[in-house]
Image 1 (cartoon, helix red, strand yellow):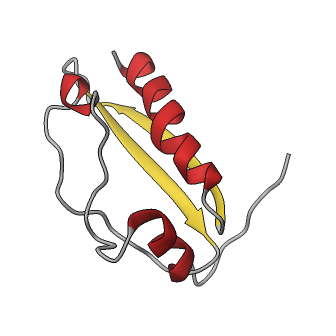
Image 2: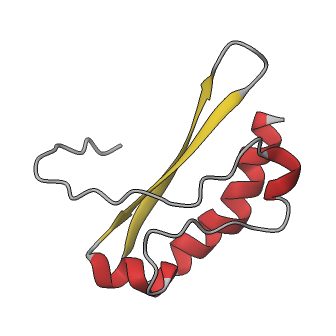
Image 3: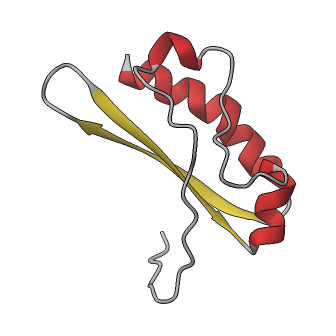
Length: 93
């Protein structure tokens, strides 16, 4: 169900992220845990924290879920993490 769920995430959260001013992009990653369970991680890149607020609202740390998430997820963390990039290198296409 990992491929199916990742398409669902792309069409819900991914579309919402892309439509939010200040979103610089997003990625969905999958990791096979080897026991029939796949971990999914959604990463998003933002111009600044004000842009994150435009997407997430005032409670920046609160995770945002969609109606069908319960069908796919074993657990739903209540909180998300925010990190500030202080060094990096992006390689374009």
